[in-house]
Length: 257
Image 1 (cartoon, rainbow, N blue to C red):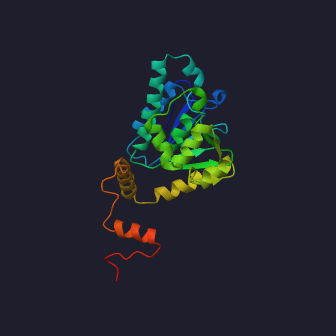
Image 2 (cartoon, rainbow, N blue to C red):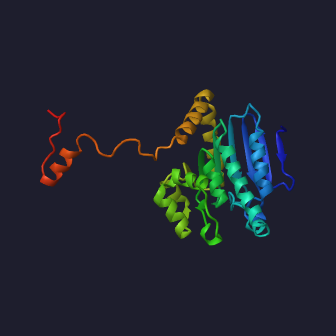
């Protein structure tokens, strides 16, 4: 892979700098919205990263991360083709998540819809005060499927995810940082560049096998279905506990002295 490459219309750029790969989205006329071809290019580039790369960063130019998928493109497609685009977004996000190396989303501005999913597919997120996050699918008649929702729930929790989608809410940078949607918050794009460099240096100074192990084991952990109830709700102390509650006294459990 060459040290620098661009897609056909130069809206995506990949730069390899020693052990770091940087992907930049640059489509200012459409707020960095990604076409189907751009999603596919992004996925392929991530899959083809050289073995010496230890860190991936993804960012956007012109004060925007990405407004998500190009809605104008979607409007021209059949319903089956639109569904295919969303499958492409999911495959791209999953490819980034499946990387053995750490990944960082550097977010100078809006990350909406598919752009939010792209940001969530990265391990860490650094944003400026202009960062904005939203999932405005309700007014577009888009139904979010479990993989998209799972990413949102893992970071935001159930209630915030529902609020985000039910109301079309937009999280501003300060609140995004408070709730953990952003790991780091900086003032502007100069600060963003400096913070990326600082975080990258810290990551590259760690044991690479240790970082790989963490990613692999977290992936295994998230694959476990913890939502199932495997044991009875009723424990051996239930009868005494419920009786003590109704009698307004402290329970006397058998194992207490």
